[in-house]
Length: 472
Image (cartoon, rainbow, N blue to C red; front, side, top):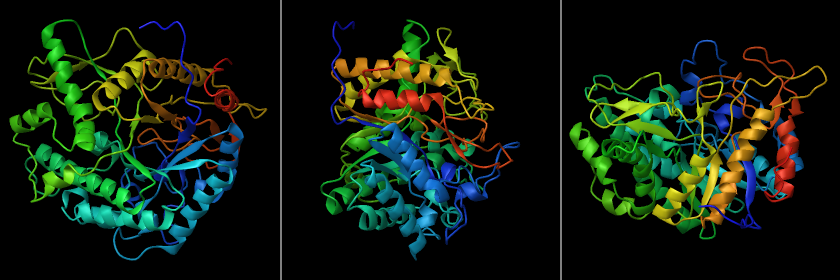
């Protein structure tokens, strides 16, 4: 659809950026914080551990001031479960409450709306030992964690996200370091989707609790959505695309919005003897969630062809790379797209397509909770970081989001990944995403000083113009 005139971005559009606690805070066992599954996992060889990260725990005032300088309307961050409740249940850590109160208040001092992710890949290690999401009690653990957050921060936080990238926790859990497989498990797929089911029940209960405790707040999910293309116009490729769209994307949003399992996903689970067990009342709980908006992470699209029956899941494939599963789809590279230095395809028009498809299906306001380019940024001798590749990537995606708004899609905000440089989940510190450069290497902490990248000044201009000025 070609538009003669573009609609403006909404006047109250929430421009900002994102981080997560375990990747940015550091202070991994400081001030009473308990270890999370991320603190005790074996990090990929050659990458940094998570003890210091970007040290935002000690430098949050400086970081928030820089975000304010850029003109942020919102800051999406996560709350570390084990910083708040060191054992995951039981005693609450007053120092954890104090830190997040300070962080929230610092945001509000600059009129930056806190957008809080409740769970971002960091199950407390004490609960991981008790079975993590595989333990049905995890539903109650998460509801209790939410209650503590709502009680302590709900007077100031208006926007909440439940679980970051639940689909990635399910599809590539071992890569992220989150999947807990009990000893002797013979059907890992069934165990994985049983854990997913517990997360779905917990999410629905927490959304209902939010509406009960904080009637003026808004809450929604935050999956990673990559629209799936058929490799050709062959009908078999279209069926494969429908299969992977259901397994990767729509199941998670169908459940969050409607409280029902997607039929294609359910057929896939039946085929693999992997349907989850329901407790009495689960159907009613799942139907009670009702999100107010959809948060979603977008990096690229996926492309699949019909399965030839020989595909095997690649345990080394990450959340944005082609996958395949015998009998359902075969992931392929899209020859029409370029790739980042880290092998992720770049597809700005696919961003528009993804937004349009989501809005057509769910008719809820949407906020982009991640979108960005990881790259090997370099600090020059005069303290500059020239990242024209990031500016170009973000500009092209914002242009497509603007077109989607003109298409009639209801967008409420844009929070690219990431506000500051942080530890990437499986590529460490060298894969930088931020507008703000952090002076450290993979193992040499250096000064941890902050530097404004070229993209910092560009994004400041984008926000000041409410998305109208995208020039360099």
